[in-house]
Length: 399
Image 1 (spheres, rainbow, N blue to C red):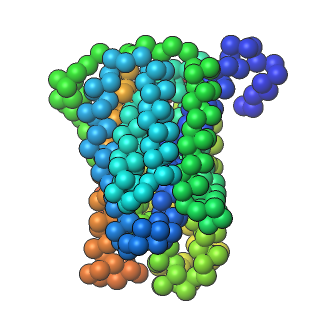
Image 2: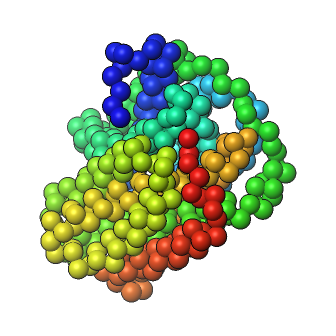
Image 3: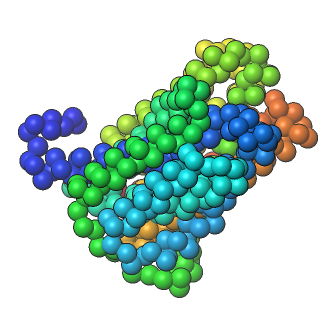
């Protein structure tokens, strides 16, 4: 159903703007996570180090987010949510100023550490905030807007960051993100309502939550899905170039289509996620598995690769949002804790996937990454089927 903002009451229109503001916030937060991949060579050259050493920027970021999401969420669990969001954006902005003026690689790592801390808290609270400010009956829309912000970070944020870095230097990219974050900070301060914390738990809440078999299965599914995905996706660019002799421009096109498909996936969820989230999860898991299985067969054709990128990217995004929605439903009074663990497990999966993919490239061959990823995805599918037969509450509507 389309919405004409001209005929929506002022209060509801404000709610839509608040939801979209959270989507823009997600875009900024994920762009800064992904953009170093496009700038590694330039940063390495500037500090006279190898690209492998520069890669510690990415590794450190993932480790900090994985390790600190839950502790930081618990430390800030009683804070009013709007002020907490503003505080973490202040840390984000200051860290990007430090990145822009970093006089050594060690200082750059320190600045990335600060950004990762802000990231860890952001993804612990942002889904719950988006749902709270959304108009009645629009929870799926709120989650899909956040997912669209994430997809746009890959589609628009990273390429734009690379263009700025090539034109004006990599420091300008981080400076631009800091400026954009400051603008969002001002809008957050003006538009967001006061949001008292709804969290009613403590460290003692964790064992209680983990006694819920559905939640444990959802977290295991999240881990398997992201491990499978990053086993293949971490090496997709060299896989296309080396195995399929795909040109640099064609490889870029395939990666862009992957991000565009993510936006398509979030749109699909906004329409049907409330009623059919479990079915969407099942179909998406199957599509991801099939995409990785046929990757080697399709690598010689850019058209086939493009089609797979659309299926795979859309399926991944549908899975992320659907699982996020299911996790949030487990306990409405512990959504921040649930999401901090969700974010941490995703980052564990990212690291594990890169590790498995690297092992496959080193000890088998780069052409095997799709099959290794598919093997892990098949375990995710088996778990998904088990969950459908075991948990009747999976079929519950979101709104």
